[in-house]
Image (cartoon, rainbow, N blue to C red; front, side, top):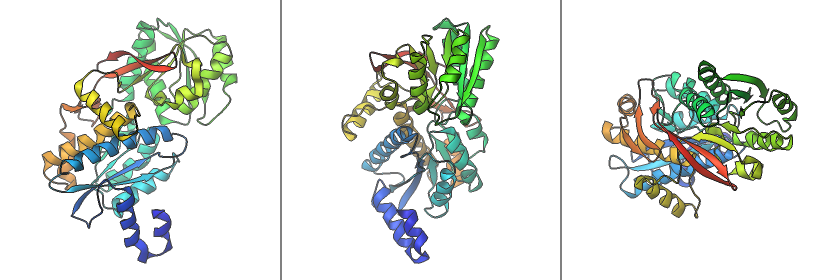
Length: 385
């Protein structure tokens, strides 16, 4: 609605900003300088909406908690968010709007690496700090020194999956079925393959698909013919659910596993009972008994009608809290000083674990392995870097 109004006439620009402040902020709108404006771009609708909605809910909860305790630097936070509809190209457009028109001091987003890679050059060129909650592809932070993440990276995730395949699944031969169109999937496949082969494993087959495909039976039949001990599917839940279901229909009984792209309640809705003997790595488990985690889980459930937070929600929450911590330490929202404060994050106690940002602006932190039992996600083990 904001963009449609803005397109009508320049005279409506002020109305557009007022509407944005009223409908999309965590505090009442105010003139520039009266609030601290933080922007978010997320996939609230479209193919990966479960990711974006979950991350957004965690971010929104953090903003509300911060405002309830006085905001930051004596000012309320004005939370301005936009939906990229899971569509290619939208994130860059939104980043430009949030930076140049809404004048946000920082950007939060996105979940998918491909969409973060669209927005990151815009943030870098304008020297506006951007923190991704869960984009794991290394290229995201390689964009420049204003780009950060609060999640682990795919090299770490790929290595832990290689170890998991060898030690837990006892797999010597693994097939890889990856999405050729997704930087996340291509990268995670690479970062699995290298340590798995170096450790004595063998890649029995490699097949490709394009995200959004509906029929995977030809590739799965080719994989089945190679009799792998396990199958790595480094994709997103919307495709993974169909892949797992079709694999079981073809009589493939080998364990199937993947990364944090599997993380969504919709995965079970899509694949149902076919998900038994499947596993994925992720950033958080609501079963963690840590008091800080349980406090977050209780607050999230209270805010969102009993919904249990997943890893994307927890990372969205931590991305906002890491930014807030940096603003407090910087004592200002001036871009250069804020950038330096974010980069100096060390041992920040978040709900996804203690976050320390390294020289490449990547988070060093543990991961968890989740399995599916009796139609429910279950915590299996924790893996520390």
